[in-house]
Length: 142
Image (cartoon, rainbow, N blue to C red; front, side, top):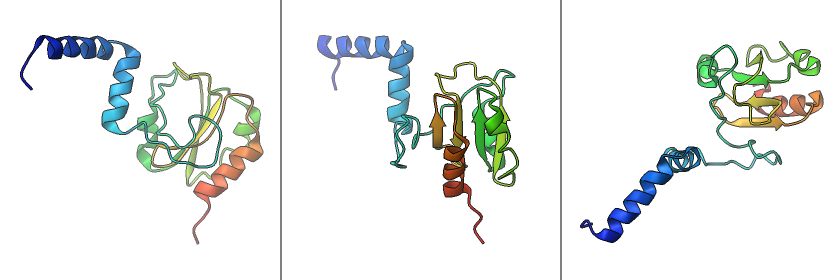
C-alpha cells in the first residue's frame, strides 16, 4: 500500500466519483448495505429495498415518520382511493399524504416498520394492491 503514481491516480479518480451525486450514492449504498434487496415477489424497483429517506414538502423526513414503530402508507399523489384506506390499519400503518421534494416519479409507497418498501406504484395506485400488501405485512397476529 505504498503511494505510487498509479495509486495516487486511482485515489484522484475515486475522489472525483465521490464528489458526484451518483458516485457518492454508489459508495454509500455499498458501505451501508442499502443496496440490499429482498425478493418480495413484486416488480417495482423499490419493492424489497430500503426506502429512500424522502423529504416531504413540510420538511419532515421519512426516517422521522418511522420512529413510532408503525409502517407508512405514503401517498404522494393524494389519491382519494388511498385516503379511503386511512385508518384501516391505524394501529400498524400511518397514512401520510403530501408531495416529496424528490419523489423520483413514485406516486405511492407502503413501507414496512423496518423501512423496507413492501409495495410501490408509479401510476394511479390500485387500492386492492395496497390492501393485499398491507394484509401480508400488517395482518393482526392473534
